[in-house]
Image (cartoon, rainbow, N blue to C red):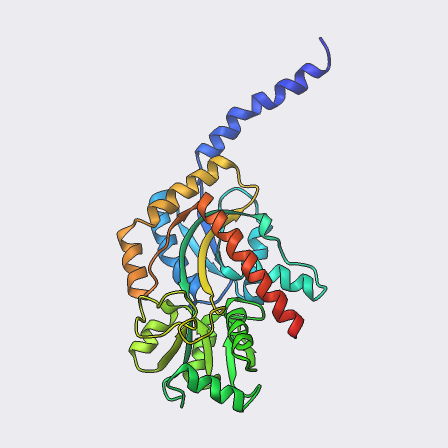
Length: 323
């Protein structure tokens, strides 16, 4: 008998145990990390999905807000988490922007997109330009004229440097030939609070985070970053309609797992996620928020992610060159 034979047999002996462990997934509570405070797009997407997946997986799915760095802290934590399917990320479209911006500034990236496995897309909303209801600007043209008259004077909020809301506003500012004053926050929730209090005068945000404030008469929406008008705000024109064809930006939310998560566990997560996107309670929550679902399973989501990320990386490269 050669000494090699037991070494070859050992993995085969372990495989049934590994298969049983994966078949038993999940065997404890799952954590769905949101890299922003409550009240923003990622949080609004995560909570209905987590509740529906909890019913499907028969284990608690706990939403954990870990704000900071425009989502970088939460994303980095999930990238480094054990790849066993029990730690997930509700990511936003800034996922690819953050590491690229860090590299452009000569700093180490907190994570790489390749460290994540796409599970599914929740939604993809066109961003909306919002101002306080008592602001003097009633149209996009009013706002642009004021910004040109007062370069660098009108403050706008964001979810953090190079996050979704920052990139969207700088994309608009570059196309319109204006300079605005960037005021970063830890997420869209605090930025909206600052808009309502008058501490900032403009904000790019998803329809779902603005709907209740527009309906309550506290916020006015001037323009939409989509190719088409947003269903929640059909009266609001797009930037394209107003002569800025290159201004297009969507805030999407999608579920991710660490890249090394075994294929059978990824498949179970995809199944539970697909069920969540059909769940009546989750669908009612999305409808109430004015953020309709746009479900894509992992392969289609991966293609969507690659295309959108390439466009946003080009945008942040332009922003960094200007700054």
